[in-house]
Amino acid sequence: MKSQSKFISFVLRHQPEAIDLDIDKNGWVSIDQLIANAKAAGTTLTREIIQDVVDNNDKGRFALSEDGKKIRALQGHSISKDRVSIEFEAKTPPEVLYHGTATRFVDSIKETGLKSFKRQYVHLSWNEDIATSVGQRHGTPVILEIDTQAMLDKGHVFYLSENNVWLTENVPAEFITVKKEQSYKPKFK
Ligand code: HQG
Image 1 (tube, rainbow, N blue to C red):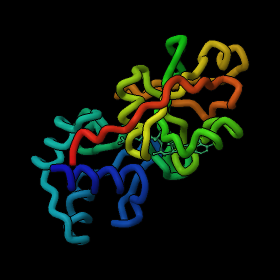
Image 2: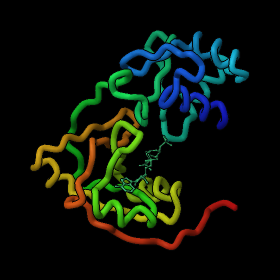
Image 3: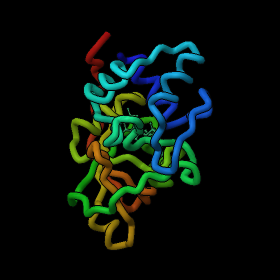
Image 4: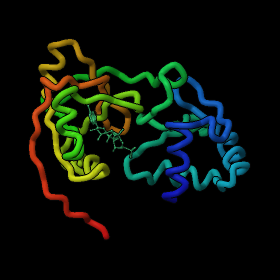
């Protein structure tokens, strides 16, 4: 299931054009078209596989439409906002949010703040364990603490995705504290 999940994530969040998928402004794609176009590209997907990916995805990344005909990723898009712009609800975050990154990025982040780069938003976590696993994807993890109250005071806006990822456009360096640097112990070999 992991490879199908990765494939679906890739075409829904990053490159629908890779398999000629029509994606609407809210990120929805027809499941029939997804199955047919994936097949033409050599990847077998069925309704059952797609349902399984939606139900069992570790981070709840995907959702089906009420009529069961469409699928979308709930956040994490790198497609331009002109094409896909999910209507997130602006919400007041907890006083502190966390961002997990890697030690090698810290100097640059201290200089220029957190940027979203290819993604549409900077992703923030409500819990340090999640932030650590996000950071580990890039190397030795470091947790950054984000002073959300000070950001709100300065007019920054936060959004919460349906799968509980906090999003914001950028985080200037003045709102960031480096919390702790950990030695990296890989869980798996
Ligand atoms: C870093 C996964 C240098 C940033 C996760 C991060 C997340 C800077 C990397 C979601 C920087 C971007 C997003 C600066 C930011 N200088 N480095 N000024 N500003 N960075 O993957 O937050 O599995 O685009 O710290 O769970 O790691 O896809 O972002 O290390 O929720 O569902 O640049 O992706 O979810 O990397 O991860 P990413 P991220 P999914």
